Each structure stands twice: as C-alpha cells, then as structure tokens.
Length: 295
Image (cartoon, rainbow, N blue to C red; front, side):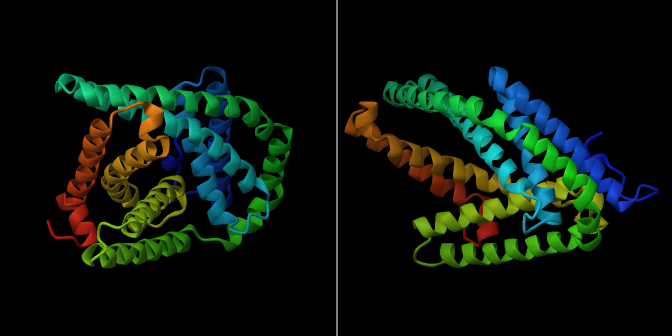
C-alpha cells in the first residue's frame, strides 16, 4: 500500500498510522538504495531518493530538532543519491537538446552539447563511485538500530505533541512570503537579476516541500490539505522549467568554453539563446501570474 493510501480515519490509531507510513518508506528506501548501488539504474536511484525525501519530510514534522540522530544520516544518503540522480537528469536533458539541434540542422550546437554530455558523464562516474563507497556505511547496522529505537521509544511521545496540519499551515505561510518576495523583485528594476532568480528557486523549493508534505503525511492531514500535492506539484513543474534552463547555463559557465573546446561564436549564440528561453519561460501565463509579472 502506498503511503498516500493509508487510512486517514477509522480504527487505526494515530501512532499506528505514523509507524506504518514510516516503516513502509524505510523498507522501500533500503530496497531501492541497495538495488541502486548494484547497477546504478536511473529508476532505482530515483525511487531511493524519493523515499528518502519522504522519510526526511516525516521526520522533520515529528522531530524538528533531530533529536533521534536519524535526520543527518538520511540527509547524507539523500545527497549521495541526489548527485547521481541530478547528473542523470542533466545528461538526459542535454541529450534531448542535442537531438533537437541535430534535427534542426545546427551542427555547432550539436557539437557543443556532445562535449557537455561527455564532461557530465565523467562527473556522474565520480558521483557513482562515491555512492558505492559511502552509502553502504550509512545503510548499515547503526542506522537500523537507531531506526528501531526511534519507532519503539521516541515515536509515541513525538506523535502525541506534533500536528502535521500545523506544519502544513506554516509551510503555506512560508510559501506565500516567498511568493511576495518574488513578486517584489520581478516587478522592480532588478527583475532579471541573480537575486530574482534565486528567489524564484527558493519559491520552487518551498512548493516542493509542500508537495512532499502533502503526499508523505496525507494520512495525518485534514481534508482541506488533500489537494495540495497536485496544486504544488504543478507550481513546482512550472518553476522547474525555468530552473532547468538556469541549471544548464550554470553548468556551461562552470565548465567553461575552453574546457569544451568550443568556438566563441558557438558559445555566445548558444548561451544567449538559453538566456532568452529563461526570459520567455518567465513570461508564460502561469508563471507570470505567479510572480506578478505582466505577459
């Protein structure tokens, strides 16, 4: 049974619901993580990371001070998985763009993207090596012992004093505050500044946090929050399109033209087009409405 399908009402007690949700996520996290270390399959990496993120979400609700010691360990695991997953996604996005450039008869951009993909694959190789080296230690006996202690000793008192609905409301307030910050920046003279884009990225992260909380803690939330997962997932995806293009630009800048052995003209044309795409994405109807920017 998926976490979001756990009963929200009925005979199952509050503590039992939390324990069931946590145990399920922990089992899936362990299973997908072990599979990921064997073949580095993209789906296994993704599933391991998602289940780890949901575990972190529930732990943050119950134990915001991280007194159990579980949060830092799982956070390290998430970062190891995340580096590989982000590299996978970035490589696939550049592959798709290379295909588009090839079909459009743009050999210069095709060669640039081919060089970027090769460079990113080398980075991914290092991330995979780090994952294989460090993740087994994080998933070992120490984590299992702390996990069982958390469920048997700490869970009951934490569930008694923590309310997921209060946390959800706090996240909503934080999201609205970040949205207002974005609107102030994008409506002002610095609408194309690094500060404005960082604020937009922060807003996307806030939407993602709301989405994950609505999903992972669905069994503990009031009816009014049940639609939040879909709402904030859509917002996250809208802002993600902008963030993706910004990540592409940052990746290219970090590597540098000389490292890729690309001509100055090809570099400038490609990066200028990316910058234009970022601006166009911001002016799309849904995003423009979100940040209060006119179309």
